Image (cartoon, rainbow, N blue to C red; front, side, top):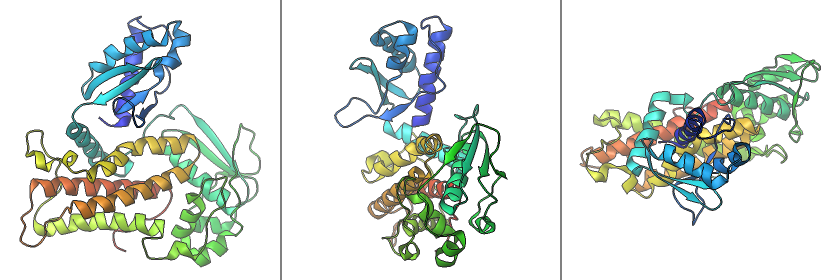
Length: 363
């Protein structure tokens, strides 16, 4: 069960409780679950009972008990506890089961992993100045909210700069449209699109414009072009290219990725490799990061997520090589490691795509 699955499971429990007249409160559009903080109980926690206590005219602890019984019966949930004033803490089923669900979701959804319909009822109008960072940020935010099901239009205060097209930016209209607007106003780049394209090219320019939070100044120096691990953009794209190279290498050795079956050799399960845990957790959290980036109009969150995935990928790759060495024969462990490496590559490619940046298979 992924965090997104758990969120939907809790929301379904709320809806069931309301339908069964056990709870008299409006069903929220979504339920937020978060990883339990150090020292806390379980894998994830949720404050929905506290949120519903007022509308339901019940103590939060009573709301939590109503929801606990319904969530605990769902497959993939190992244990549900009530902590503090009414928090629900969830311990998922065996890690191997949860990990398998995440990798299966990535394999089946491909570059669309993490896309959803949480914003399907929203009609948005983004408006920005005739400035390159505002234009690129608005375009990336547009892609993020579209990936979450929203309908959106983007407008510029004045006629767009023709060079924006070379950065992949499109604008639906310019001037001030007669509609409620959401302004996209990051700190200006201090350079024109033409200047950035000449110095950096489109991919490095977009990364530099999007990587910093909107209230911070964008770093647009020559470091963005360095072909080395100190350059986060290079590291992200190299991790993706390396993941794709592993797939080609495995094919040459005659094997493919495969998540281990429940009854397979325990050594094949990724849960038995400490270096795999951070990467598995980041991949599981990816849908939540994309939704948060869309809700908060913050593509920088996606960029930082990709950096974290790339870092965890290389740690995993070095500790648990997905390809056999020397005369070693491919094993179930190699197949499961390759499945995780391929999932990381897919997440990196999908995230870069949402930022409007290419993910080459060779660097």
